[in-house]
Length: 143
Ligand SMILES: Nc1ncnc2c1ncn2[C@@H]1O[C@H](COP(=O)(O)OP(=O)(O)OP(=O)(O)O)[C@@H](O)[C@H]1O
Ligand SMILES: [Mg+2]
Image (tube, rainbow, N blue to C red):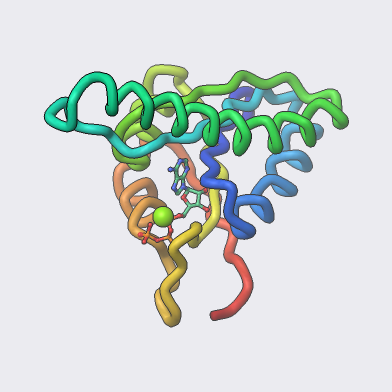
């Protein structure tokens, strides 16, 4: 039923908590997991040399975040692919969900910029609103 699971992560505690659910469900359903991190779009106008530098740094950081999740899945013997995209996170998530035709998205309710008192971050809110498949939102610690 859940052959393909999309796991978007920003490296936050909340998304790490969501990974535990990814593991449990992937084990049960022999799922393939798409680990996704999106880094912000860097505009052309800042100059190609400077832009390239920031893109490289962002890519390295994205690799670190996705590798952390990949190591967990490796230990569990769960097959996965890593997607690193430039642009707004909700667009990247919705795009990969559609292109890869995933059956389930598992993500945190909040991310790195958690504001006190707000239940859903803007990324998770946009994803639940527009996703083409079911979305499991894992709540973090109370703020
Ligand atoms: N850049 C990203 N790449 C991949 N997944 C992301 C990214 N940002 C957020 N997510 C996913 O969305 C979940 C919710 O994060 P979200 O960004 O919506 O909350 P926030 O950071 O607390 O608030 P906001 O970003 O709206 O200020 C995260 O736990 C993670 O699963
Ligand atoms: Mg965020």
